[in-house]
Image 1 (tube, rainbow, N blue to C red):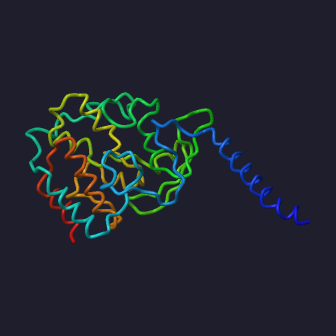
Image 2 (cartoon, rainbow, N blue to C red; image 1 turned 180 degrees about the horizontal axis):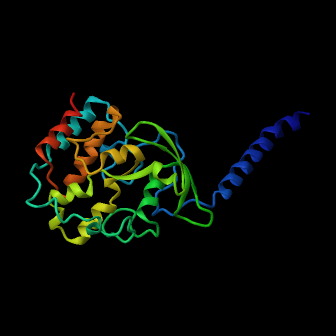
Image 3 (tube, one colour; image 1 turned 120 degrees about the horizontal axis):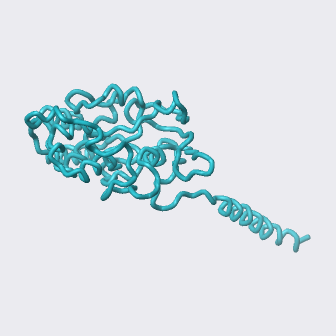
Length: 257
């Protein structure tokens, strides 16, 4: 009897190890390292201050005094200016390349075989399920939306896909007016497909934003507005885009102490 009791812990440990190994072996659908991983942790989102290249998911609020001070410094670095003469004419979405190009150069996630929209759904979604036999196309997922502050159940379909949209934080039309009209085409394609400038968000909230700058539109959820301002500033600084004085002040005011 004593010998059997001594063996029981060893048998239980071996059984546990076998279960663990079986679970690891079963995980054969892990995406390649150059594609954003499917999400699984509820409410996951990265602070924009800790995510300077935009490859981490979502947008987390900035709540500490230190973070908000860092946000104000970053926003303070923005150059100001006005729209170029006649810059509101000539804008066309095609000037930034076809939508969701995987072939844009010089930005994270490009060239991985998946279009930009699906890359962003995979980056920001939780409980992501891909189309059977496809390494890219997202069929269903959950989104902790940063703009409206609500959870969205996404399901691909003719009428349901637009419940989640991919927002250009710095709208392409805004960029065009503030200097992108004079850029080389490659740089415009980068801005349009750079994950730093892209967020998966609530469709109606994104539609209400349109091409507005922060002086005219901010996310409905007030808690996220300082983080949104940081992300807007990060994009503008990376691409050397000025913002209007009104937009800079709007951003700075969202991160007041």
